[in-house]
Image (cartoon, rainbow over all chains, first blue to last red; front, side):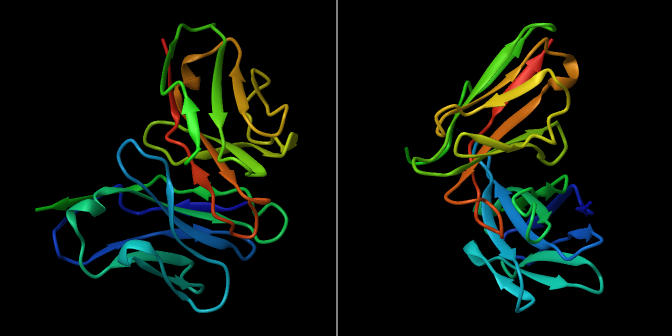
Length: 115
Length: 116
């Protein structure tokens, strides 16, 4: 079984400042890792994912995340946020191979960008 | 359609009533998923279809929950004798293929169910 911990439920940040949203996971097997974003009144959208290979993953809208196996983390970063980045961000994992369709999500982090 | 469509957007039910939540996936998408998102929580997996076959229903919380996708397209999640703990947002997602191996899922906006 896997679990995901998002350490911050809310993160306020000023416009054009950098931001890091933290995600740690627990699993007895290797996992696939994902970040999804949910804008108000919209469905979840995939930002980026790590399956294998390079530990630095670049996604849409200027976001990137780094997989750290030793720390079991997959933190999301953006060097300069915009007002439009205000949303809720969910980290998720799935097992590789059999059962990889089943995502386990964290509780989410609400990012508020302050003008 | 352009995206995954769910209806109704909001549903209020009295405790004990039956409800049916509808999901229209993206046309041609093979796999369909239902997730339940309680207030302040992340989505939790309920069930998974490939075409009309329900391959995994391990996340359904009780036998009051039933999902179907009879023609491999539209899906309905039915909850019988609703309880207050069923109050949540019910999310539907679809994917082009199996949905595994990191394949991108496309989510609908959800149905917010409130049981009074």
